[in-house]
Length: 75
View 1 (cartoon, one colour):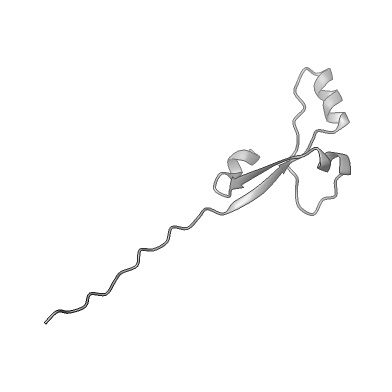
View 2: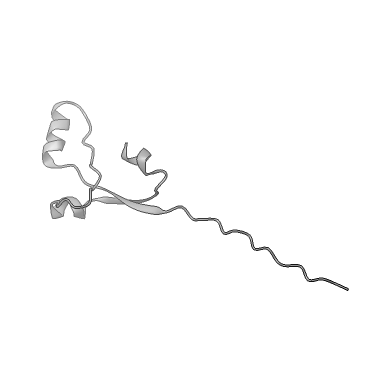
């Protein structure tokens, strides 16, 4: 007599959660201060709940980053 074997399903791999990080364009003040002191004007990371100028938001750069890599990007 043959017995039927139950098929065991493989557990699915979880995809890493992806978050969108938005880098804002530096303000005029940041650009002027960087020029005066010989540095580079760095853009900020957009924080939720804070209102920004439309110009800064229009020229922002968006990146999709896994949540595990997010602290490295923010630092």
